[in-house]
Length: 283
Image (cartoon, rainbow, N blue to C red; front, top):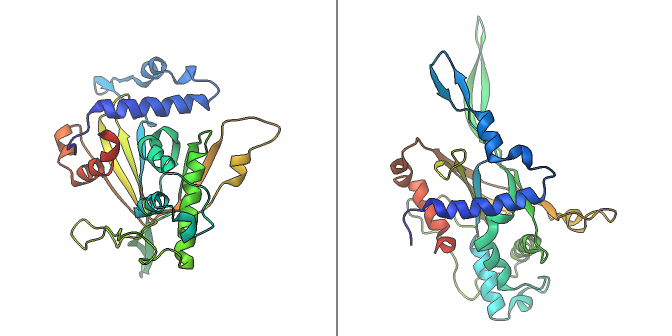
């Protein structure tokens, strides 16, 4: 397993994301690299130097599968998927393997859940004092995707839905599964008890026009809320790329932002965890 990810990995992923993004935008000439570079530099005479404003939009998204994917792949291999729960659609391992490698190519946008501070009020003789009482995590968020002609994105989420349904109805138990899939060991670094249908979503924030990592965000305990049937069938009077919006619930978020020193990033525990999670697609 690699300990450090080189910039070439992100360049390939970023170029793939741009190709998909440009396919669904009408005019890309205004967002060309040269035009943005010319417009982003402004001279601040008071400081006697060039100050570069922050340019956003440079990030990488990856979804780490929960153990439910391995469970379904094993059931497909042993031809026991329909026998275990007949409501599963026709599935093959290629859907899961494809998205393990190419997920970032199809995720065009993400609405990251917010962290908020709640305040209570203490009444005083002269004035009221608002004091922080709780850091509140808004767990709902969404991701936009461009789907494939084989409906890989939709099929993945449909299987995810059916897996949760099968668990709730009691069809998937230790007796019906080929082996024990639990990853929770109760050790330091285990965030919470492993729920098999929870995924994790990574967002890597870059410096503009580079693959220098400026921040890492990991959204934990992610599971789907909706299946976008209308977005799959589209509008009969129009023929467009299939762009679907998936809404998710999540349980927690961890994040860390870095200075300009690469050594700081590489020493971070969160970075090492990120490298471990995406190891299957950087081999």
